[in-house]
Amino acid sequence: MEHYPQYGQVIIVISTAQLTVFLLILARISGVFIQAPVFSSRNVPFYIKTAIAVWLSLILWFVVPISPLLPTGVVSLIFALTFETAFGFLIGFVCSIIFLAIQSAGEIMDLQMGLSVASALDPVFGSVISIIGRMTFMLALIIFINANGHHLILSAFYESFSILPAGTVANFTSSKLAMQLINLGASFWATAIILSAPIVLLIFLSDFAFGIVSRVAPQVNVFMLGFQVKPMLGLLGISLCLPFIASYIDKMIELIMGQVLLLSKILVG
Image (cartoon, rainbow, N blue to C red; front, top):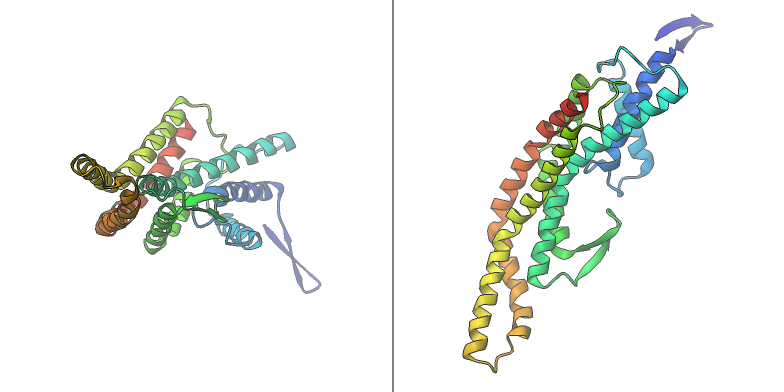
């Protein structure tokens, strides 16, 4: 970038290589904003998210490492922008998988408590979400913001350039990448099962007790009684397990940066 004073004004000349670097950074951070929690929220207007993405790209423009072999042609530039956007999307996906797991845990709780029929359309996701699933997601979001998780995402995004500089062709066909995504999927279901296990066990014990009641007193309609007892029992179990759930979510958020850096190293090949 050079400054040429002319008629009392400053004319900024940007070279093609510098503009290419800016577009590559913007493409990567755009992929993050598509999928990452908080940044991808539909409650935030599109123009505000675009302005934040451009502003962050300007900050990182002359700071982050770049590849010595930048794309020169139009076709190679399109491929490079596609790779950067896909990599940013993977970073956002790794960060959002915790929220998806916590929401799935709430869905499992709803299913056991008999509240799965009480679902509503969530404009943030554009899908139908149950009551407890929505509650657990909002709980995770509050813990995430309180623990400065959005700063952690930006920090992991910045560190990703140290491992995978802008303009580097990522190896998306690696078998290690597939195994890493499979491991993330396994962690997704493990988190959902661990968080919902106390409530599932509590409802199972109540069903077992209702089974004994139905054998001792057949005239008692345990089916209708279960619809009244299970939701209250489940909410009681959630309130008792709330400190454990909050602590577990906090620990999962701390693992985000390590997973992003590991993903960057795998894509380097």
